Amino acid sequence: MRKLQMVDLKSQYEKIKDTVNASIQEVLDTNTYINGPQVQQFQKSLEDYLGVKHVIPCANGTDALQIAMMGLGLQPGDEVITADFTFAATVEVIALLQLTPVLVDVEMGNMNISIEAIKKAITPKTKAIVPVHLFGRAANMDAIMDIANEHNLYVIEDNAQAIGADFTGRDGVKRKVGTIGHVGATSFFPSKNLGCYGDGGAIFTNDDALAHTLRGIVNHGMYVRYHHDVVGVNSRLDSIQAAVLNAKLPLLDSYNEARQNAARKYSKGFEGHKNIIAPTICDACDCHVFHQYTLRIIDANRDALMEHLLAKGIPCAIYYPIPLHSQKAYLDPRYKEEDFPITNQLVKEVISLPMHTELDDEQIRFIVDSVLEFFN
Ligand SMILES: Cc1ncc(COP(=O)(O)O)c(C=O)c1O
Image (tube, rainbow, N blue to C red; front, side, top):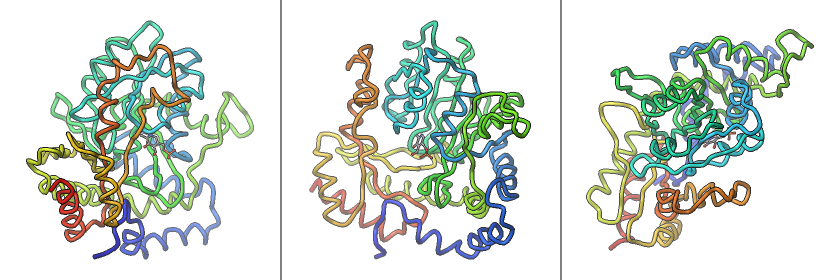
């Protein structure tokens, strides 16, 4: 059996080596390391893939979120509602811009931001909602857009973990997540569903004026060279990373399918087990692209299961072990433990198994058997 890894980028690279190498070689041959034609090509291809008017490439997913918030003109003291159960980058940029983070609980079913909790958290100072499509699964964008429209709020989708996932609206139309709110942000960190070989990110929007503003912000606030109209940042996707992404974007759907197939096999193996809640996979839509395959372990010792798996050479991880509202950097006397029952439960129950495009049947069988063996 091939060595088990949480993410197997080497085996993936072996299969696409020729295309990726040729794409990178082009950058080296043309010496266009910054803003080369590869960046524009990637921007255009991603706009086509997502069905969005504007993609603004940038240096990483954290910057993408920050720049999106800057572009919307959010001001210190504005309240921004986001999920308590996510990676810290989401809340970090809110705090960094001196906006006021308002963390709210998530829903048990999809582990995404709770619609009821958003409604309860709205005050006259609320300006934006940041849903995170956690682990690759689309948040309930119909409900979120309804609330945003009713209260005149911006929606900034954190799509770092779900590129390529679809959300089917109540109108029956499938849209790529990240393109439904006013603005979306993603990451091309190597382990992401569409990952480059370093750092990378992008912002998406259908709003022409906002796209123009964002293009200036990523480039030191310049719209005309050496004319700095707004305070900006330096956040570029470099040409070599764009070259890697140009080689990988045409494979994104097949990569997401490979992840879904692996998830299906895992979930079948865990079906009906009294201590394991496995993620559901709907066949009719692509609302989950399995950035992570995350189980909930019920009435059993999750940490002992983790030790059991690690001892057998199976990598696994707890995403995320501490709710954001309990992290030192984000403590706030307004938060009450009883407002976060689901997140507080999830951090004790979740465990993520290896998930990537190269998992084979033998590996999946071994992982499933090893998990089941723990409960015997
Ligand atoms: C939910 C979420 N948001 C934002 C980010 C930030 O992306 P990056 O690491 O590219 O800055 C990540 C990356 O792990 C993430 O998982």
